[in-house]
Image 1 (spheres, rainbow, N blue to C red):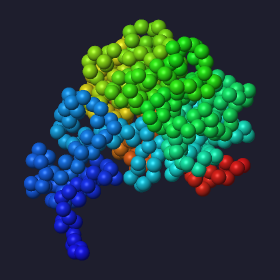
Image 2: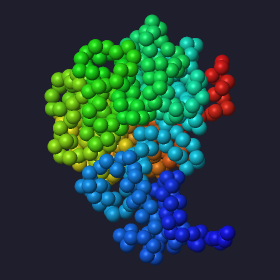
Image 3: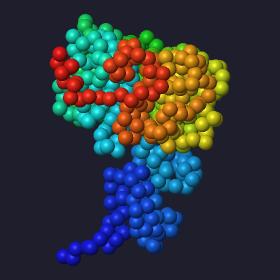
Image 4: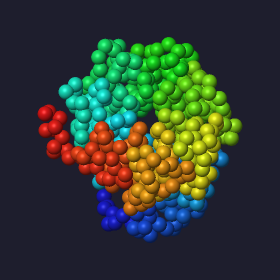
Length: 487
């Protein structure tokens, strides 16, 4: 059998198969295109509508992408035009949206995710899970003897399968493993951990037996309830239900995860987000559903009535807007559509909605000041919002309390009422961001971790408990963790 002497001798269909294997990112494709005229040229080996073999590969990867595939023809066309007719940039948008809400594949080969709770932070790194901050009711997962971790400590799991997704709330945490198992820890007095025993806190991650044999891919922890999203697109909820936040059409509490039957007829759900006492669910077709407490207009229906069952937000339905991601804050909501546009609604106090004033928005409103940017992640918390765009920059607005917006040239009590780029991070490409009550943490494409804001309860993972008024790098010392963990 003849042996080909170089990659230039490979048939074009083999080269295309390599490029579309799914192992290459949009950045990798750009590098490949620049490295050889074979990939950067046309040579008539593929349809002339593609400028290069790499462009054709990027287009094929977009077509099979789970975000892009269910989009309407018009939405796909608009996204393509927003990306200046460049399929590699379309792919960058799609991959960035996925990584920002899932696992970040860093340039160092590490897979990471970071989530901030009220007074603590959870981190996935190198197939291990770490936590730092205040261990209220066992939320850090280290056992009853640990009340606070001033640096990231590794959590011991009974499952050998690595954790791939985490969610943090005020007093409980939830974890999903690669095999689809769900573990929870923290205060279960409100049934939010999904275990029948409510007499004492759960100090170490415990497998949720009610979901045995039901593989999950995402969890979302609210104040006193939890949402679970299965790989098949079904939603389960448990916890308190006084405002209908569990979505079952009533106000009856659920001690263990129960499927939300009222979402079964809308198609697969692709993302969930939990506020204090309300819930949001994004369907595969781009419809956004909300239910629970209507306080502060967070449900997006123009009124403050509670909804006991999932109700589509008609603003998006009427305009044909395909939502791909949503973030539920304490008093407001921020959503991202399939073309990278951002929408906010709810309580406008301190400029948390980003429209230049502090007026409440009863229904979603387009954030016009970011129309020229393609957003890939949105993140809301207490009176503040972050928007990550596809070039790795971060825009922030809202309340600056404790420096949790990361701006260094304003007082700690100021407010920012319009999106403003976080200049102190210009030198870094940000891949994921998460914000808690008074602190914010993020991950760069190189795998660096930065944090800023309140650190009184060690929620930033620094040995010093000082407030950080500007982004400060956080280091995870894996060699020292085991000693602290077993102390």
